[in-house]
Length: 459
Image (tube, rainbow, N blue to C red):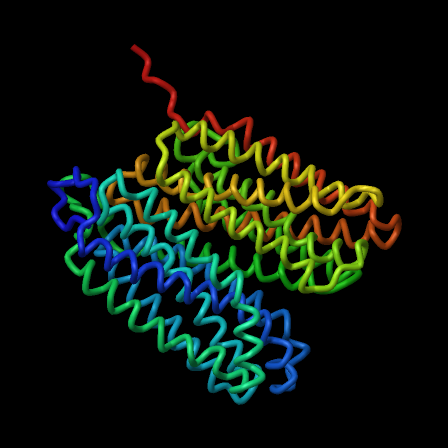
């Protein structure tokens, strides 16, 4: 870590930077565990609080407020030290955990979940800005690889641990126990980044003036659109179509101004970087969501066996990030290779719709997809750092996260609606439509990857 902006050439980690990485990885691990554990515990929670009718809202509300948190954190980080939005985010996250853990009604639980989403959106963006400002360029990809690795253990054992906690201590401790880890992790980060400076407004035109309340309002509307799409995906019939279509329209209209100009046409440089994050996330996650379902319903595998394909993807994701952190190819090479591997993975898992196809093809393919996205995510984050002035790091990092959230929700909702309807009509072949759509997205990512590099200036 360097707290002196004039000495960015350090390539070997200092003791302070190692402690900081430990704190940041611990905080991301906590967030990952909570995200996975709640999915395991929520059926028990909804039943205990007589709130099965609000089951889907417990997830969609968190998604919605996380979008708001991302935008707020980015604006604050551009105006002050990143430790401030980090503290607010962790405080909101911890307060949400306490509210959910002590909830006596589903309404209180939803308030807690909303605070958790707001907080997690804020501290994730703040952590990325800390990487940009506290580490020299040579170390950033390695730190981001550690962020990816932080998801591996929760992916492997999170649901199992959550189930044990629910059965042994009660569902409330799924929330309350996390506070015990989140707060010390935040203290470590704060003590090691307290002197990481705010952007020098005088030197680089840093963001000054009042907070962008209009952007906060747009983020709230975009979050509402995400929530509507998420809720719609959990319903049926005309209600599903109305929620998905209305949510998609709202999220698109409100979300577009939150992204760099030119994002939708993949203008060279930062707009393509932000667009790629959304496209790749949508291609990967909208494919992944169908894997356990098709393995259980069409290949008659147990939930535990079907879930191993997701574990394989999580492990190779971390492996891909580690390779990215230790090698020195061009950004375009990482992005084209990673996107190509995701395309290969989608073709491989699409063979599950063919009765004679071995399931092993899907496992090998999804391992390739995990490796590919593992290379892509840190590459895009590093590009955002490189293409941003210090006073833009917060807003551009939040744009990266918002693109991920909006595009993933959009494609998941639309493909889920289409696939559900088609499977009911034509059977297993209906899944091919969903995989076909995500394959097109992966191929689009391959095609536009070279556009992350700005065009050379005319002479």
